[in-house]
Length: 438
Image (cartoon, rainbow, N blue to C red; front, side, top):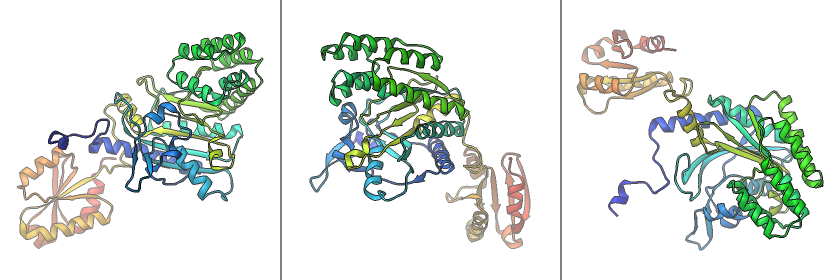
């Protein structure tokens, strides 16, 4: 038990100030993009009824949920993703809102995954949902939101892996496979276990034509998404629903290009995602330096049906901590810009007890001008306090003693320029701002 007092639960993390600041930077950018596109923020509970969260999340994800019984005997779980909660919120609290409904949410999520690089049991996401439109323009908007957010974070060389659930489901449905059988196959494809998926399909007694078509789709590899799309059309032309899905995907991608997006598209016919509620276009975002997706999303037109009303929807979620990790890899010495975390950090240092009140007055004056100020509360000598301030990145130290109190002055020391001067208290705010490096 003693050892447990000093360590976090496996898969959970403490985040130090620099790590936290980077996560908050990504979160701030996510909020600004939400406002830019007209997405309004909502907050949903971290704990939900198990039945809600388990309904369409997929068997593999159900196994990784944090599930428990509360003191009232209710079976509940920590949310592993946002979309189910948003679907509940929209159908129960926003049913009369005019469509489309654009919603943004952010917060912590929980999955009992095996901890590894870029994968934790507690993680953070920024989530966007566009509810009420079945048009391809809605899918394009979700892709556009995604790219805009990546640009805002400063990431480079990212690419979008894109597919369409309707292609594979259209083929499998035509062979009489039910949703449960299809979901099992999709789970295998999500893990890139194509051969295993084909074995299952074969055991289920599908036609030779179906097997041949699936094998051909999985073998399509080309950097040019247009050639991939044409090859897909050729392979699925005997399956009406699958062909309709390919044409829908073509429409989405053409509109995306017309919008002048700049991200690289990698179209993969055998691509699937683990969540069972997807019905149309799906995508994931990667950077070359990491083998885990930064985020992903797609269309889910049938999820809201479990609440009684069929409503089309599309959405996207970006992993905040994974994005922060990617930023650290691509720009290892970069820190959030001064517009987010103040470039100025001031320490007010009273030389003895007689001037503590004066020091507090100076601190208050600076804070009223929105300058970040720390008060020396350790009782250290001036030399020790200055040494510590330099180590912690303090930009300015204001020293006050009995003489300064008597004359209504302060000593302002610029820690970066190694300069100091004596000023009247009314001039200190202007002086701090003038010596700030822009």
